[in-house]
Length: 103
Image (tube, rainbow, N blue to C red; front, side, top):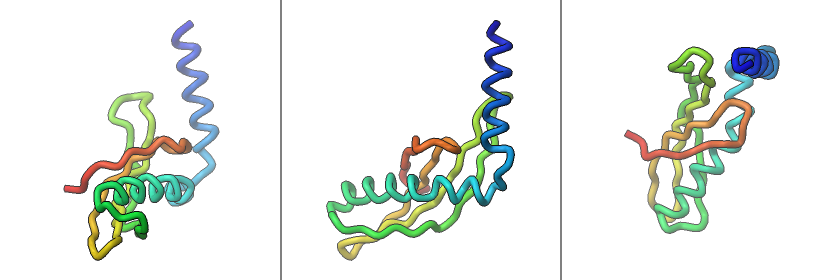
């Protein structure tokens, strides 16, 4: 039963993302990633008005078989005469993103 469910979930994920190119997948999550970086930047920079810019983007392949692809963005955030960068990771096709401090 579990294998049937797992196969159905994988098939649905392939159908949902199978028709999109990696560039299209990255573009679809770009707004959510920018929003997460902006909110973290507003807090850390103590600045209500920030601007974001996508510095790079990449599709991360799953580590485990049956895992989920994720979009990774490096986003610059600037405001109040300061700036910083964040690495933002989003589950492809989902508004679920998190921002981590850059390296």
